[in-house]
Length: 86
Image (cartoon, rainbow, N blue to C red; front, side):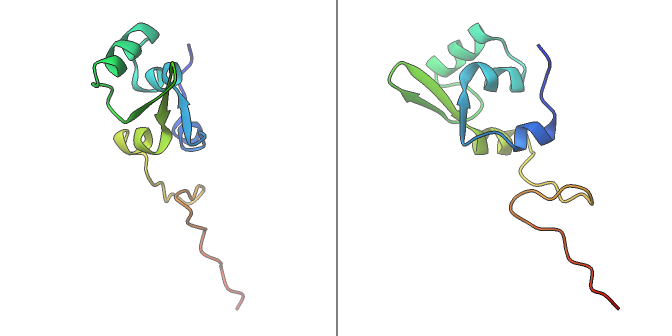
């Protein structure tokens, strides 16, 4: 399975399924469920009925991708500074 880029990870919805989150951190489906059940998944996991959901913001923080202020990409709600006409 192909990994996700940092930009793709930052654009995830508020919660994602456990298998996708596991893929992002580099573990398979079985290991992701084992970690979630034991409370050892590297970020917050929500149990909703029989489903596990991972908070994307927590996952992004764990990966150290919280903000990227490079010239061509502005995340974290920051806009590129406007250039003023002379």
